Image (cartoon, rainbow, N blue to C red; front, top):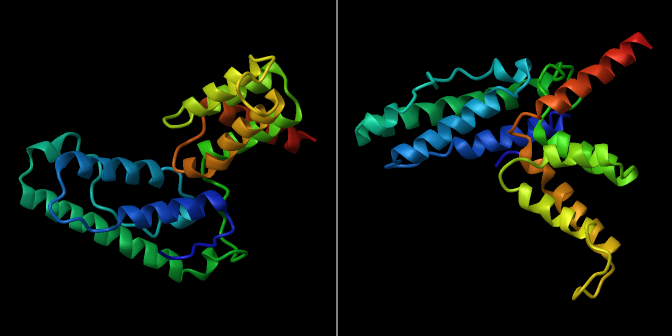
Length: 209
C-alpha cells in the first residue's frame, strides 16, 4: 500500500480505497464485480478534479450486465479496470502538485460523510442541543453507523447505569467516541444534502463578512 499525503485527509483515504479496489481477482463473480464498480463510481465522484483527471477508466455504467457476461468477459473487464486504476494511482503519485502543499486545488470535491460525522460529533459534544443531536442522527444514517447512534441514544435515555460499572455520562462519551473513531472510514460516501447545504450557507456568510 502506498502512503498518500495530498494534504487532504478524505482524498488520501479515497486513494487508499481505490488502491484496494485495484487488486486483481481471478474468477470474480458478477456480484463482487458490481461491488467493485459501485465503489469506483462512488469514490470517483468525490475526488477533486486535479486528482480525477489522472484516471482514464473503462465505461463504468454497465447496469446488471455482469450477470449476463461469461466468466472470461467478467475477468477481462475486471482486469482492464484494475489496470486503469493502477495507472491512475501511479499518475497521481508522480504528480508533484498533488503532494502536500504542492499547489493543486483540492477544494472542489463535495463534502464527505466522514467529514459530516466528525463535525456532528464535535458539535454535539460541545453543545448538546436537540438540533445538534438531529444532525448527528442524520450523519449516522448509513450502514454500519446507525447501530452506534442507537447505542448513544439508549444511554441518553438512561438516568442510571444499570449493570454497567460506569456512570451514564461515561457510557455516553464512549458511545460518541465510537462514532467519531469510525468516521474516517466514511470518506468514500458523500455527505447528506442537509450537511452540504449548511456548509454552503456557512461559506456564503463567510464571503459576505
